[in-house]
Image 1: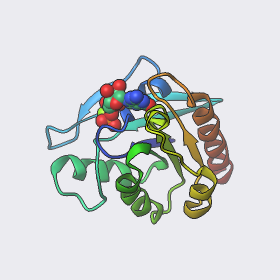
Image 2: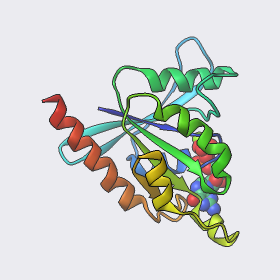
Image 3: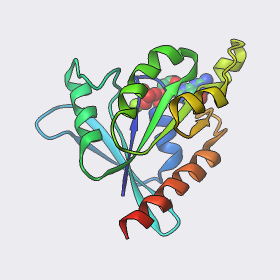
Image 4: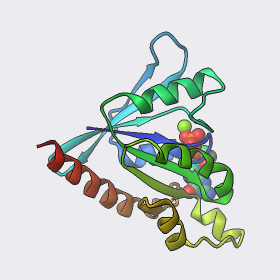
Length: 168
Ligand SMILES: Nc1nc2c(ncn2[C@@H]2O[C@H](COP(=O)(O)OP(=O)(O)O)[C@@H](O)[C@H]2O)c(=O)[nH]1
Ligand SMILES: [Mg+2]
């Protein structure tokens, strides 16, 4: 099974990736390009979930090589889960990609990162409203402190277990 971390540049994808995966990560160049991406493994019960840290992208309609690679990594047929990392202080811009990915038939988690910055700026987010509007599980995190990572694990586990059942 395979999960892809998708999101705009600089939202905390790589910090989330490091928190989810162990020490053994592999950095590769996407075939035919100089664009790098990182893969690691996360243990989810009995399952070894492959996690891909995709290059940052603003849209599924690529406007450069890195966005093209992100799209290819996403659309590989073995992608079972999208972890959409967003910068909660730039929700509107970030949700553009979220809405596009929601149209694809792959389970998605909306990871609202940088909650600490939002708190400092007095930004309040109605998680329930977002959950209702987007119909995806929502997990708030502060990637740099580790806050919310346990909850993110939990939600990933639930989806992995459901997918396993369907595949059997
Ligand atoms: N304050 C704060 N900074 C964060 C958080 N997550 C990531 N960062 C910082 O944001 C910057 C971009 O993170 P990175 O993981 O490289 O983003 P990526 O481009 O999406 O992979 C780095 O300086 C991180 O330390 C967070 O939750 N809160
Ligand atoms: Mg990164």
